[in-house]
Image 1 (cartoon, one colour):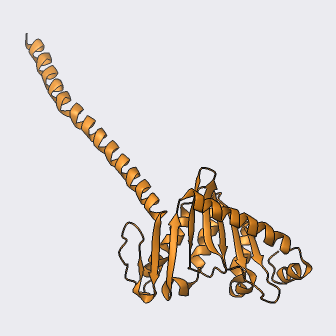
Image 2: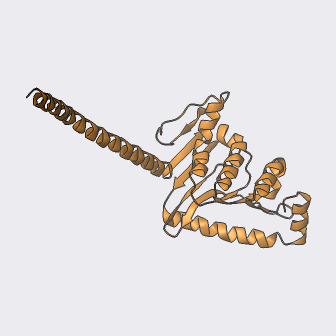
Image 3: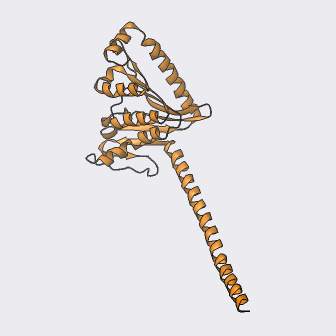
Length: 242
């Protein structure tokens, strides 16, 4: 009888503990699942907002329109983290690429952009860069580094500065089913981010993205053929860009 009572008491204790622990771990699992789901949902929502917004640069006053905080961000240009905040829209756009990046700019002079492009290429993103040759003089070393890494770079050579390649846009992950666009008045220069009044539009509107992609392909193919001209080829060889 004594042994029976001990067994019954142990069973009662175990049953009581189970009645407490099973709901606890069940609810803990459900709560953790909810938190993970909410975190992923919030990340996807922020990703969507950051690809469908208008960012304004207002000289030394700062930047506005960048989710999640769309009000003006005041900048202290003496602090490195302030400069990083100003560049966050472009770096975020590059860093979140999954398949491809096609850039067309008159010039790129921001070192962190060059670093982000190389990092994207190294993780398997197809990167193509189209620049205006006459504005590349001070960044030839960085452009050569892109080429050395295996990134495709073309520079438009205007004979006698008759015209310049003045585009300012990036197309990301273009496909028949989607893609993203970064465009506006902003050249990728420190003065553009810090000093100037500039606008940047980010959109996932497929018709808009498709139009820019078609433009990029046309311009890319034109410059590629145009650079076979003896003058252009000699100019690029002298600059060690081919």
